[in-house]
Length: 462
Image (cartoon, rainbow, N blue to C red; front, side, top):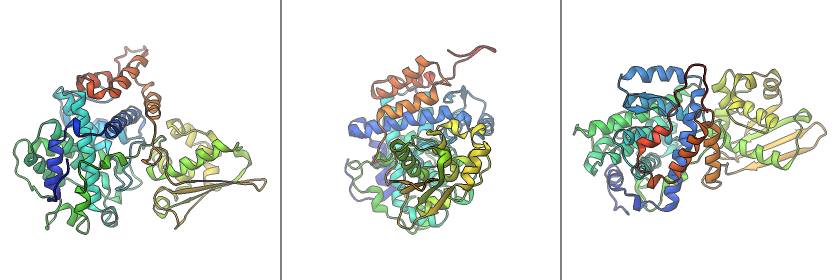
């Protein structure tokens, strides 16, 4: 599906509207399945998010209909389920990340795709193509916008890029032609928002779920033939590339479109904690796999990060509750060292409020920026009380394109967070459904499998 040189909005709209299952290379299809399964794992864990009850109340208040499923929950309106599922995927900080644009993708793309595919009873193959269309559009628009330029203006990528990916996914499921898809992008761009003023608060996660809802609204309104800008990305007065950046790099959004699949660069997280901390996590786990380290005999744990990672995660030796623990490099390093594990159990109050662990994080973990390191690159050094020094470096964290998770890794992540929420047999049914998604007959059936079992008071699920 090679594209001639065209205005970026039109080229991406035509690409998304015409994308077929047969256009997807096998590697791309498999990665889309991994993205979906990972998103479902994150959503099932999302009930442990501190703010989840607040977003649940908001989602329930949007409308009173019950046509769409909440992952691991009951039913809400189309809008409410899209909003809540988006938040659930990102609630406990372990969803995907497209590092070239610093955007999370599945919280925006997967929820509206699931909602429409369920409502319209589309096939698993249709859902797979929609996820591919939305993910590719989102990441390519991010490349065209140029991360350094829009980050310098304070914009947070998920809220800015998310509406486009969501609109593309919904538009593909609804069979939009290129003209309607371009108008959906115009309506999506009119809702693109979110800045780093929200950093270190849960509002950054709200950017994601609001982006999912914005894209849903954009697509459904475009379907009503609502008039909208059809060249939103490159419009001189207020277009995304000009208003949010320095004119962008439109050629990057369309280069080798349909031949090179940017969505394959979307990284997954094996562990909860912020995306830029995954290099530190990988380095520490690699070190602990090679050396038996007694935390009681550690004098200092030193972490060298890139400047950007340090700015976000190297300044919280004293953290408050769960959200700050999830983004604190000091706490995350300390708990990995002590527990040799990093799951949501490490981010429960009983663990992060342990006085010994808090003291270690504050007094014995040292984090500094290193100008020779970029992005997620990290060097970890442990100095023992006997003077020995152990070190490890990570350039490509687990889950990245260069160091990907295996299918078995993603399945195990799903099992870990699905088993407390779903009966064991249902967990395996979901795994089988996603594994053969292109042959699975009904997205509605998939959502039924993900429903929390109704349990009588005093009883427990099997």
